[in-house]
Image (tube, rainbow, N blue to C red; front, side, top):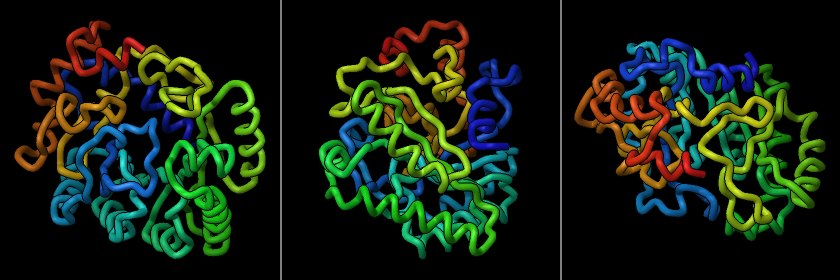
Length: 306
């Protein structure tokens, strides 16, 4: 399956996941690191108070919990930049050894150095996706609040990743995604994407959720409708049928809202096992609201309101 086929399979919400009590999610994201070398003003991290990395022993427990529950895919990222986690290759290897079928990462690319990428691919990484949302160094500096040199560094790392994958014949697929802008920004982004297409196995576009400082006044789309080209109704949202675990061990309903560490927390996995947390009373109530297509009064209200 390609990355868009996998994404579409999740966003479609199969019939067995249109309930309040669910089987184990097909896919779970784990926040190894809440730290990031970017400070993008559109990211949830800009309003988060916490940082830090996941406890290694907790991760070992968690990854086995997920495998035993029947989780098939694990994304070793969530809100922070996972390439800042020194034991990322070990986390990949441990996930594969535990029985996770598909391990994937999304990165801003600037810290995905040749040495780090090689170690991750050798450990069994199945998918490496570069999130390319800036058309040039100046825009990167203005929106991500970093030095403009990070733009060329990211493209260098992408080229190196492709070379490493091909030379070593690793099975890891290399992907990229980008926000689809209108106007001049959109034209610049399309030019950039054309230049990197030979380096990736697939690229896909995402709608503009909220990207202050770079959206040219375009309003945010309602909810999380998935990728451009296969957008879906925002209710029920597929996020409540997938797992998101913060670096502190909190099981959160999604990664969009500002309440990923409080109002969107469905369980504390440092206190309960994954199966219990996955079908907690809080999660069941939130899923019921989504199925009823009325999230008024829930943590999802503002997101769905658009």
